[in-house]
Amino acid sequence: MAGQAELFSYNQETIDMEMASLTNLENFVLENPGLSLNDLIATENVLVADMTSSTAFYGLEAMSDRALGIGGFWWGCCLGPVGVLVVFLMAEDSGETRSSIVGCVISSLLGAGGGILSRGNAWY
Image 1 (cartoon, rainbow, N blue to C red):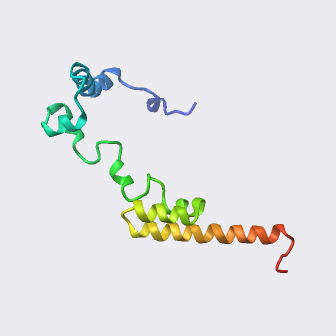
Image 2 (cartoon, rainbow, N blue to C red):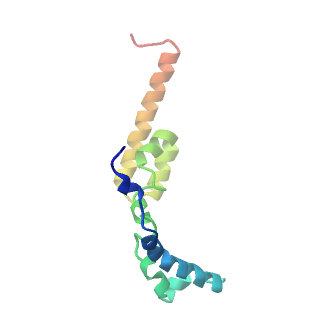
Image 3 (cartoon, helix red, strand yellow):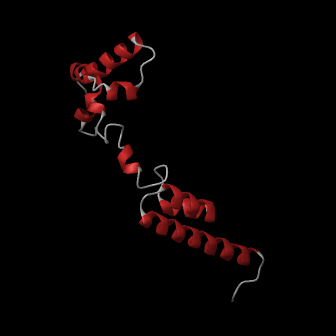
C-alpha cells in the first residue's frame, strides 16, 4: 500500500544494455589472461575509456580527503593519538587532521569523566 511500486520495478533490457560494455571488457580480459587494467589504460583501449576518469571507481576520489574514507573525527575519537597520526599521514586535508584532534580530545575527556565517576570521586 506504499503507492510507489515504480521504485521497485526495472527494465531488464536497459540493464543489459548498460552492462554490455562491462561484459565486453570481461570477455577481453578472459581472452588475454596476462593483461592488467594499467596495460589497457596505457594502450588507450576503448573498453576502458569510461574508466579513466577519476570518479569511475565508485567515488574513490571523494575518499582521498579522508583516511580510508573514514572521517578524521572518528579516527581521533576511536584510536586517540594513533588515529590523529593516521589522519595526519594519510589525509590530504588539514581540516581532517584538526577534526581528528577534536575527536581525540572529546574521547579523552569522556574517558576521564567516566573514570572519575566510576571511582565515586564525583566533583559534587
